[in-house]
Structures are given as C-alpha cells and as structure tokens.
Image 1 (cartoon, rainbow, N blue to C red):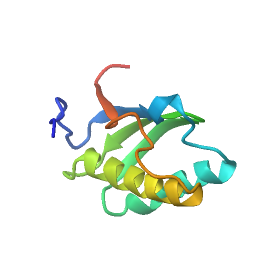
Image 2: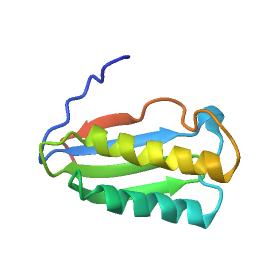
Image 3: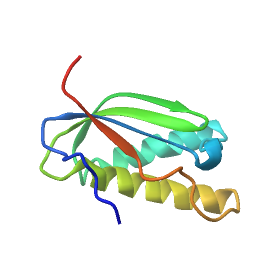
Length: 111
C-alpha cells in the first residue's frame, strides 16, 4: 500500500478531494448529499475537524478542512467515505469501488 506524501498536523488546513470511478456520479439524489454531510457530522466526534468550506458535485467533492486534534485527518476521511461507499452500494445494488482511488490532499498554507 502506498504511503501519502503529505503529513497531517493539528491546526493545519487541507484541501481534500476525490471523484467517482470512471468519472461516474457519486451523488444521485439530494438524499445522497445529505447522508454524506450527516456522516461527516457524526464522525467529527471521534476526529475533531473544522469544516471551512465544501463543494459537493454529482461526480466529485472538495473539502477545505482544518485538523483540530492530533488524530490525522485521513482517519476521518477514510471512515466517512468507507461508510458512504457501503451505503451507496447497498442502496443502488452495486459492488466495488465508488471512487477513482484514494482521496487527494493538499496542505493549504497560503490564501
């Protein structure tokens, strides 16, 4: 398994993004968007994060997040999108990967 080049640190900002496998939709209904946001809210209890901004589009997403604890942001993102993928696959009677690959992360240290 490849390791990330980025190191997640407390009080730092990160642009997190990914898109659907084969550029397919990862959100099909308004309920899909709401479910993902609900998951994010629930998981924040285990891994505190400040949500600065987000953009959810039919086939990809972007988040600007600030890590609020020593717990790496990657743990939160993996938990949310693993749960989302399982629910999405169950709902639409599909199997396999939903995303193009592991999420991308860019450390944001400039405006």
